[in-house]
Length: 140
Length: 100
Image 1 (tube, each protein chain N blue to C red):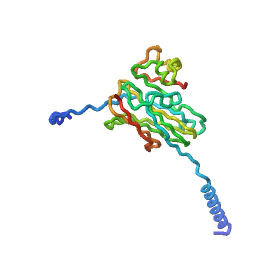
Image 2 (cartoon, chains in turn cyan, brown):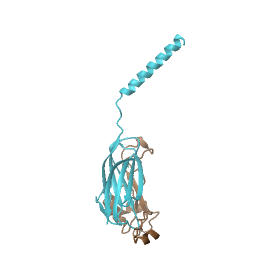
Image 3 (cartoon, each protein chain N blue to C red):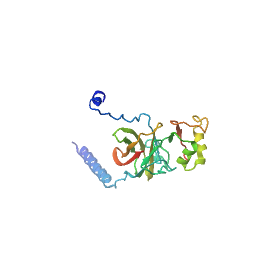
Image 4 (tube, each protein chain N blue to C red):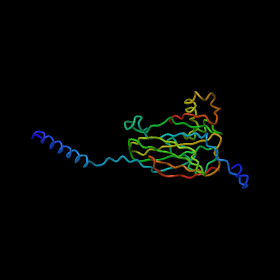
């Protein structure tokens, strides 16, 4: 290795170390999204909050779940997994959102034109595949 | 069940049928990948829909969606392609709900 080549290697190494130091000292950008509230009910307001909270539905009702999230991120996947008392998965829906920092509200709804069978139901909300909470309700 | 159910005098309950369930959703947050971080302010992610159930009317849906039954023409206008008569909507019809 010539002196010139040796100098270039040393300069490259020093640059790499300097670059790493700079990026390591930067504060981490907070991109976390978290679920702050989950409500279940019969209807929605215009801002997607639950208009009539309940855990007791009638067979002709539409189920609504409203999920409040906080934080920001380029992509977050919210999933609503609805199950019946016997463990059957009634439905699983997903939405990919890109919350920009302020509180966001995401809703899912479920209906059955010929009416819901009576019994216990559960909706589980997942954020990026991880459970963020569940709500139990019944149809009578 | 069949033979074994008869043999032991047990009758299994039929499984509930959820094959015709309709689902939907929307969000005040921008959709990931569509407009992405450049989208500013609240926006609807997907076409918000509502599936008509027995006993519904446009004014009932307007009351539920907007908090004002008088706003039913907004839903009617957005669904002229599937609603011929605003007094006649049918269970299972999927209506587009425009923003209030």
